[in-house]
Image (cartoon, rainbow over all chains, first blue to last red; front, side):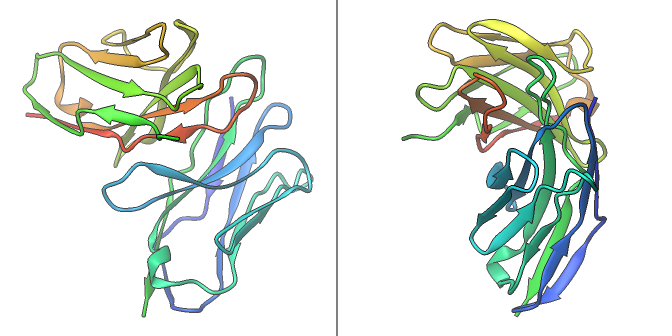
Amino acid sequence: GNSVTQMEGPVTLSEEAFLTINCTYTATGYPSLFWYVQYPGEGLQLLLKATKADDKGSNKGFEATYRKETTSFHLEKGSVQVSDSAVYFCAPLGSGGSNYKLTFGKGTLLTVNP
Amino acid sequence: KAGVTQTPRYLIKTRGQQVTLSCSPISGHRSVSWYQQTPGQGLQFLFEYFSETQRNKGNFPGRFSGRQFSNSRSEMNVSTLELGDSALYLCASSKGQGPDTQYFGPGTRLTVL
């Protein structure tokens, strides 16, 4: 099955700093790739996705590019805000047959200080 | 469009009891997946239902079961609760045709005493 290695946190940044959260995966075939974000006490919100190699997903200033050659999907943001403080999860979606389950990394806690 | 809803939001049970959680998917979505989130194990896949049939299953004991109704609403049941079943249970819905994006509900927080 799929597996994910995600950058260990916690990550603490000052407002307007540059953010990178690394994510690499192993998978059968070419899975769709997702980043989800979880705010305290809430469920997961879709942040962005990419469905094929070299696709760039983007949303709310966050970006991630599907790199097939390095099996990576690193999350970046040029200038973080206090409101970005949350836990971020990288997840490939199974692509074999009808195996449409998400495999999650351990999550990276981001804290942004004013 | 309304999002995924889960009820109840919070539950407190004692060991040995059973519990039923409910999930209503986004209108038009036919697939419902369930995940368990704990501090120790992280997010783990429980099972997925599509058109009232279990299509995929994770590595959980038989105490965990689910079903899906003709309107795509889903329930999961945990029997003979154990302390380790305390977790946030998340449900996600998708169209179910191919590798679609899954949209998550707010979760049900289950505490087993």
